[in-house]
Length: 223
Image 1 (cartoon, rainbow, N blue to C red):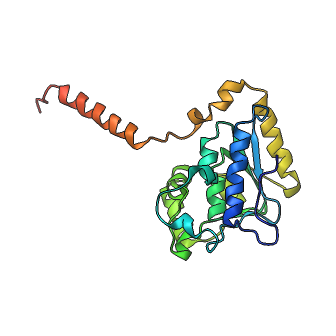
Image 2: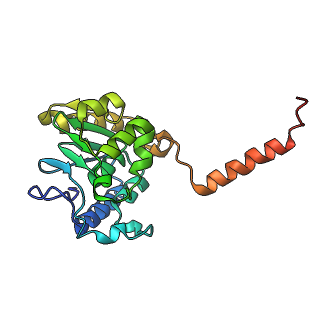
Image 3: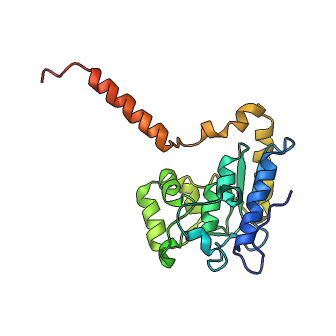
């Protein structure tokens, strides 16, 4: 199944295309014949962002319709998603890349966060995900400078798993997918356990209550 991507001549998502992508991910997630999803761009870029005029409502607060949110659908999907980054992954495109479970990039690929340039907040978790992967200091530099980062640099930082020639990109992604398919289906589908731990507010509250109860039961220190 082909997942809608930005038009090659425009390189950015309009809101309708974003909705279509969410529907495609949801469809693939429910298809038992699909074991692994490979996500790539169709032109010179993986995705160079979102059309701010067409997607104005994306930035109107925190309430979202998860059914039409592509990143939420990617995060809900239990199947591994391999991002094959074939060119620029800018801002929203960068966030979509971060929602993948692992990344393969062409040597021409570049990652860029321009939220600060346009005065908007990341709406898909970039500020948390990026710092967890490459470290807070590097993440601040990437976001505050809005400078492009090469595929080779992101590989050294641990963001990208493999950097290959452009014509080898999908071949490498398929090789990884085939290796995954050979393994136990149920364990591969439990990709959530393999991700960096993400704690909900309720889980965090319970953890604090547990720690507090342990501390209250401790005998007072003689020091």
